[in-house]
Image (cartoon, rainbow, N blue to C red):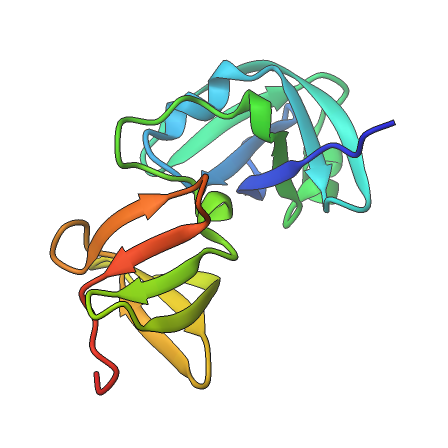
Amino acid sequence: MSQLHLISVGKIAGPFGVRGWLKVRPFFEPAEALLQSKDWRLGSAEDFREWRLESGRPHGRFLRVKLRGCEDRDAAEMLAGKEVLLAHEQLPDLAENEYYWDDLMGLRVINTENIELGRVTGLMETGANDVLVVQGEEERLIPYVWQQVVQSVDLEAGEMRVDWGLDY
């Protein structure tokens, strides 16, 4: 049996009201795209429980959702802090040159001088733009700014081309 490739797509921020509704912080935009999938998993990739999405709607930067079996505020409070996981196949399609963070993890990062800077080991959200954490001989923080810094991403080849010098 093949193992499910689960992606963290959000986090339960806490209860919303007293009838089991939850406030969810999605990790991507548009937030309401998360509502397309009805089969959710809450927890971690190694330890999760399956839930069925009954209803949901955008609420500012968050979503308000109702999961089957979560009927009151106490049940909702027990889910606070849990990650929302979806199978990779459940993720909404992205526009051209848009990628899920998970897809970028492990890519070789090569600069315009054909020097390998390392591999993507993480990403950070900074407000202005996302930042790649690239681990090579040393750790580098490279802004994920499409076309200005990130020139191309080739998921099949497992590499990303960047305009970033060794001395930055």
